[in-house]
Amino acid sequence: MNKLYVALNLIRLLNENRTVTSALVAEDMGISLRTAQRYLLEMSSLPGVCYDDSRHCWYMAEKYGLSESYLKQDELAVLSGLFDYAENILNNEFSGTLRRIKKKVISASNRERVVRFLKQDSIEFEKIADIFAELETFIMNRQEISFLYSKNGKSYIIKPYRIIYGDGFWYLAGDKNGEIRKFSLDLIENLKATGSIFDGVPEGLDAEIDEAKSMFFDAGKKIKVECILAHPMADFLRRKRFFPHQQILEEYENLSVRFSFQAGSPLECVKLCLEWLPHIRILSPHIVRDYFADILRESLEVNGG
Image (cartoon, rainbow, N blue to C red; front, side, top):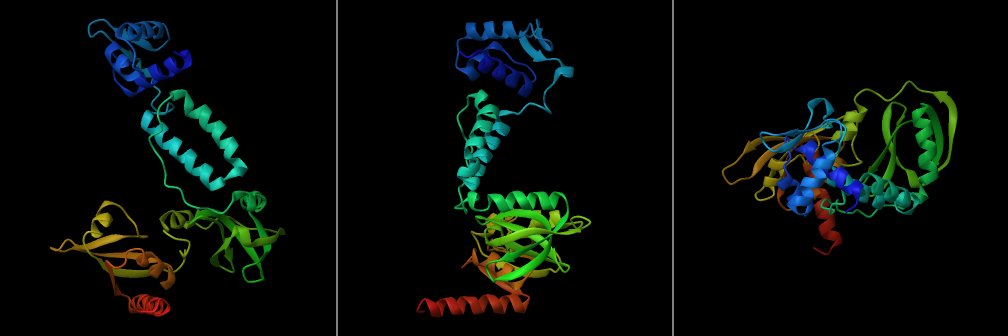
């Protein structure tokens, strides 16, 4: 068996468990008890690896603990899944590099891949790689930029704040005359610096982005929406947050829930609610409820209803 693999797995077991026995090593690595004892005896010569005669087990001396620097098996599994997901997003441009990094970080554990993130069709990264690199520099240097946006043929001057990935697309979030705007990177042309420098990202913007559930978020204004979600879909809201600033306000005997969330525009509110049809009912405000109903009526007409 590969010595590096043996050493890494013994260190992992010592780090994850208070004590390690030859029986535990044999079961974990699929080897005989005698082989496990030999491996542990070889390891005991290393600094920090100690043997307890009374309990017949090995342990890591406290000052040699690796809990803050050594990845545990569950952490490796999640990291492996993230590498796969990132490779899907970035496509061919960086896939080779990601595979090499993953091999260096993950493969030494020689464990079966157990975590996968569902793939999402995304725009090919090579289409926006150059713009991405330029924007990264402008953001880090706090340089104001100008560009042509091919979606509407208009030119913009923006303070670039963050690059965001959502719904299979890459976006630039930036400030235009005090308002946060979002632009698809694949539609940005003639990108250049204006020569002006800005102070930095507004306080709270990163938290707002982290809380956002769609690219229609607005970092300034907020609309508070109240809804009722019927059983069995209501169970999902009890388990995690699907809406920005989600709060469960009341639970009913029929297992439905009344809840609230906050969003930046009626369009964002409606987009978030559409995914829960036909189980959701918007209670307030009326501007969102009416907009939601109008969209459903228009859809019914388009589809011959």
